Length: 192
Image (cartoon, rainbow, N blue to C red; front, side, top):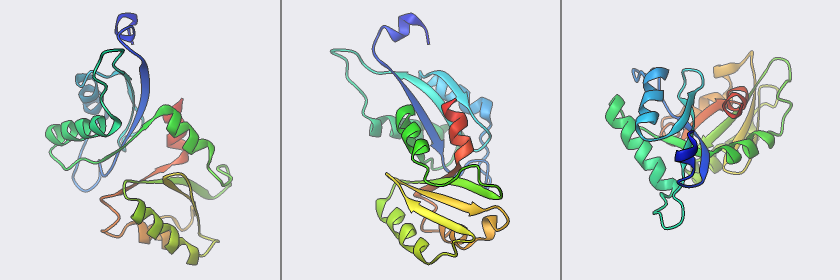
């Protein structure tokens, strides 16, 4: 980000996690995604993997400016995604610092051989609570779930993968519009 641009206000680093792209017929190429975020006035735009992960910087309004709330920023990005790629966009929007706290709080051994370390993000606290309650009856040999601050941490035995009980629960239609899942390793790459 240029010095002139940064002098206009405080620079905040954000992470946007898009839900439901590059699956089910919604194709969003990384180069086009980067271009869209740049067209919205964001700097240092970087995409990670092809699953809709964007790191970017935004100049927050200085004194006397009209600051855009996080909710308004999220809505603006979702609207632009929907217009550009023709789908009903939903994202998780976090500051880099918020994502760092989520990653640091991962309660399991992320390097455990044969296991996937996941973080499930959600926009509906009731859905996250319902998923957490359903996790109580899981076979700990396949899935282990623990509630975090606005997320669910999930350790999934690689051998079971999408056939595990918790994976099947999270795939239910009622949870799809409000949740998105990321491998912890992807989140670490976004923070790099």
